[in-house]
Image (cartoon, rainbow, N blue to C red):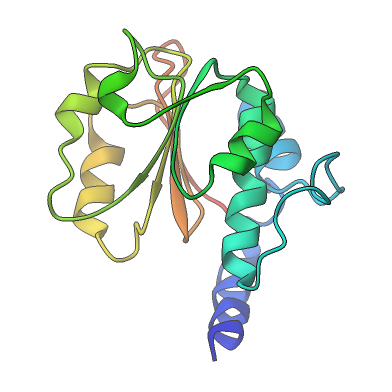
Length: 177
């Protein structure tokens, strides 16, 4: 049943496939070669022997994001092996509070108690924030997208990606992931 739902979601977002309609070359490149990359990455065989197709899909996205961003610190969680495979030099820390002045690549799971103020205080123009469960908490996601501190946002249905580069025009994209 879950696979059938995935097919329905994919078909409903078919017009947002592979970066169609994105005018920014930087955003198009990010969608085409990081978010929706279809070629196998060098560490796919080493990590990701998952039973759940969605967990594997999300893990591979995190590997590609870590490979693109090359963070120095990664918060340890269920997907640590993917982040570490994407960036070997990344140091694993226990929580966001252990991170120094700024965050580089952060994965959050949306919930009712999520306080974005503490996150916003530790971001800069290179920060990439991934928020999971955006369909379960649409008000939180809308608040993040509309916030003046955020820049370009990507709605991948299963998660949202937020970039904080204020030099770029604020945009919100729906991506068929």
